[in-house]
Length: 350
Length: 263
Image (cartoon, rainbow over all chains, first blue to last red; front, side, top):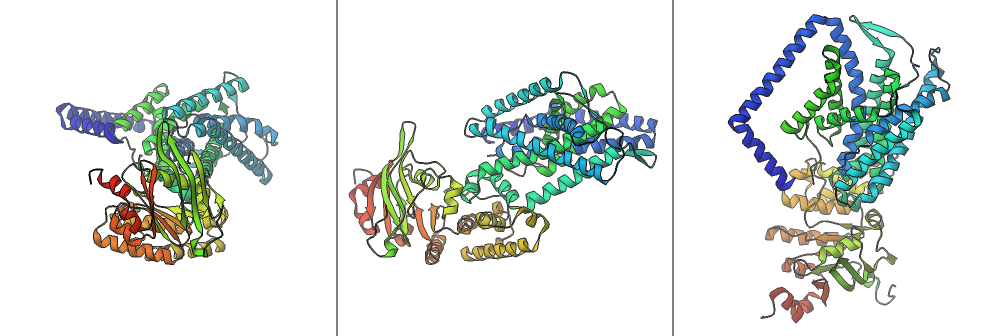
């Protein structure tokens, strides 16, 4: 932090205590209240069934954002780098699994049984591993050689990696959206008048399993402890016998496993993928990570859910052409009013 | 490399041979040669900027020396990665305390035990018996270490919330958790009251009794003269004196380095 951070803090407190600051604050509250009022009228207009329906979709979207956001936040927590290529690893997960699904004998409109579930599970495992290998390679090639370089250098290579991956996926599948096989059974249940499909349930359950697994892993395992130690003080961690190169690689591995799972579930839910999918989804997930407090794992999970809610409610009740504007307006507001996110960063800045 | 002469306790545990460290044009450590013998308290002193911490960084592998050799228990370790050096049996503390601030005191020590643990991933996720047994063993040992340095009452507080002296002691306990045979202490008495310094000297004695050789950097002459068997003095990266506290105290070059020429 240091002097610059101090100056920003002082400037902000000056601003907020001043007359213009008060006006800004009041303006912000008026804006939020006006928005909530508008949302309220639309909600009443569309009825409770629609509200619940949007809510279920929002939870599924939020879960996917959360899975991507976790990778951003874990990598930031350990090496203080925004891995801009992370969103593209997510997109790669969608693309790779689209090719793997027929390869593993799954097709659209088939009959589902225990064996098909195993087949889908195999698609998940292989895709997640492919994403992990990709992300670990990215770290090895583009970030590790620059570990002692100024912080701007790996940021530039991260952007480069992102463009490289998007270019590679462009060459692979072309410029337009490609169809993602719609393999999940078209079953649904009605809960209080809203439809819940197998797609949403798959996303919820997978995300819960992965996030709980991650939390247990970070909290209990040796590697998880090593990751927390490395995030807090890299030199001290090394002197405690922790191989930081391996620990950092493991962080990229785990982040990519989660993003890969997110990529598959995105494909399964929306049945479409495009080469620059990682850019748009990545930006939302990145916003989610900042919203929750970058570096904070629980923050990223909550941030993902909140952004899923905001985006889906906006798309459901307002014009979806504006949803990116809303997302970035939120990013800017978080950075201005609560730069450490809603939960704040557990890991102190060095 | 090892000298066969003398009793076992005189054998070198750490030997530095013509060690030099350059940062660009600056020579931080220049051609330093000495050895630390097993079972002694060895001190490295010198004015600020003499290159003492640089030497520690060279030994632990954080910033490898430019040239020269560092031999630990007969094995060349110059350029070895820090985590390997820790596994080989060297631990250290830092001049400016560097704990894992957002972990409890006990957890800090458990990280130190890290390189000694064997439970597999699945064991720890599902708390299998093997893991539980090992975890209990390791946690018991961690509590023992906290008692050893006298801070067991803060076992479950965040490291950052411990009082200053407690943090320094916790850092020593964390270093001991890797079960080293050589412990490097970088200014362990900095900021201590006279009472705390006496306690620290007693603690160093206990560490020595447990079979760990201690190599320390210290500014406080009372502490250095009181506990070390042999001393090396560094000034501007050069070794200017070497010997027992008595010899070093009388050495005119040491007096000059500390007090200036006119004395």
